[in-house]
Length: 221
View 1 (tube, rainbow, N blue to C red):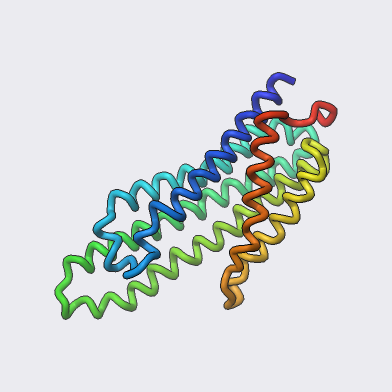
View 2 (tube, rainbow, N blue to C red):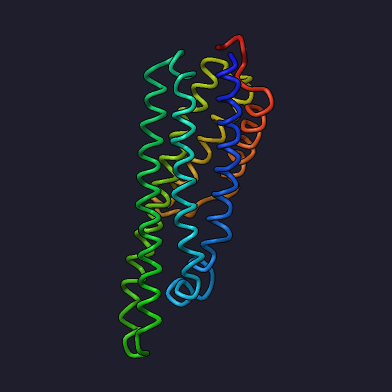
């Protein structure tokens, strides 16, 4: 029982760290890549900041795997198959995060080459800009889909075996469906509806605080 309580606190802390790290990477550290005047012009001047974002991005990707590993002994008591799926999807999610962050470094390298190029040479970088940016963007969306799928298994386990209040787990499942729908939209030529991502943020925050304060429900262990 004490091991489960300790595990729930670790998982809660990891979820909070994951949320904080994701916000820092996506809205602060990588801002020079996606704001005006574009990464070709801006990235080279912020090389250290972007390098930190890559390392932190890999760390954020690793938290999902850490959560799956810490939770495996508990989830495995209820369903070995779902527990293994949780770990497997977390591994894939981390792998895609690695691909995405390699693409970010490619954006930085291209920006550094652009900064050294003459005015006449810079026109040649436009095609490469589109290719490199697209590689990062598609890796990002695929990563979000696998990350969402990992959370789908997590909330399914929590709901099926009543490891947390089922109302919380059900809210998480609905939030995940909305998130997966939103991040899959670019695959079909549509823009992400960011409002559809908000419920997952709320759900993750509540889940993290619940696990940290209350832990898994004892009657389910």
